[in-house]
Image 1 (cartoon, rainbow, N blue to C red):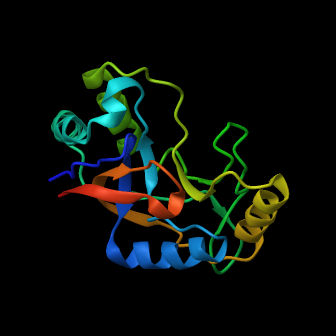
Image 2: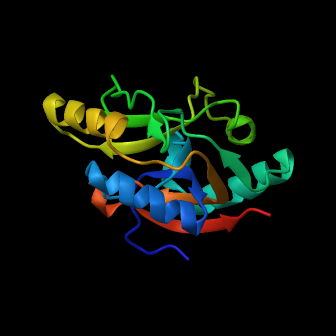
Image 3: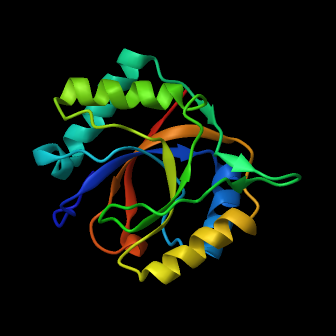
Length: 187
């Protein structure tokens, strides 16, 4: 299932259904994103972060514990007619990301999934703000600010996104090399 030259770092993502994925991919591409649309659930620390087989098992166990099913999440949007990220904030961490917050009330099932993942794995349950990453990389602040402004003012976003899968994704290297290595369908 996983190749011999596996990347060293993996994350657990919530993946939108195909229609929402297409719409998000188009909008994200306009700000420069070169990776699959997703809501980040967990980027584990320690040995778990480099063990995709264990992460898949962990996802199944957490899904059983939370009874996670298909979910509809709402990007934190504003504006009339179309939807736009409300603030498209830039991360202040070393990730240098531009993020679209997800309304935490609509993401309660994903928050529960993250909590279960942390409890089962023993990973530290750091504060969690559900979000979609719009742009990620070692970019000048001016470029990140321009992307955040474009996302907040010009792009059309779905008002809601149906999450139909949980995935384990290889997130080593440049964002354009990130790839989903395992998908788990939600009922």
